[in-house]
Image (cartoon, rainbow over all chains, first blue to last red; front, side):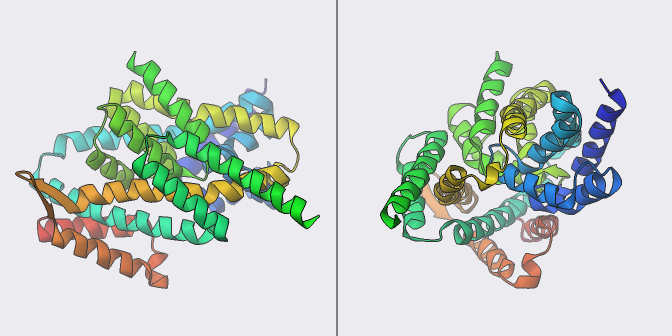
Length: 183
Length: 184
């Protein structure tokens, strides 16, 4: 096993994870620099393909990209090292922040700041939801699925995972019916 | 024992959260009902900290949730469990499936999943918002007008193109200042 390659994968994705805020698309420029330009592990086009796959598979998009690139370079162990590299900075940073915050959380100024932050975060997330709605609800069926999922989440104890599965099945059935009608 | 429960719960989240880090939010919300690892209000803090530290937001939130539940080992277990399903699935796709994202059935499934994910996250945000703007004082439900105003103004400002592109970190820092100044 090529340990040098594994170390390179770990270090590269550690850098990407540790230096980008936000994950997802925010990570793309950094990925391009490390993965395409510096190491030539894949081409620009492949990277975008990997991104597309990362978006339509379960899990965190940035991590999925790390797994895919690592796997293509050095097999399963390569996938593991890329993934571990990507999540290591989060583990270190979040544990540090959480343990520090525990000591200060009772100070009034920290409480006020957190209260303000919570409101702003709600607005930020609301904004994310609105843009997801714009992208996701493209026709009547989309609106129907949105409403149905919202009602299920709001008023029934149906598990979130089941809602995801049901909506995927609905999409497949709808597209099949559509195909049959047009043919 | 708690590590096993954490591993099970976060494996499940990793398997079913599709569409990026925020997609884990509805699942984390479920956890607040099932376990006493963290409260809904703490969950909002976790989102804020996850957005303002480096690393993928979904991973940060899982790490934080695991840490709250069972310290550093909990953080490690939750994070690894979250990434495990994707690791397996991605390796299988890389090995066996070409043009996975172009597959007709995959596309059709996503056509259904996208609006559902928006709804699930929307509901989770609604729950967080309720905690942030409504308080129960001696059995009476009170709406905190200042909080509603700050939230509304922030949302309106986010619709301004140039401001909307600012990094979340900037907004979060501004929120902290507003909170301290107004004594929220």
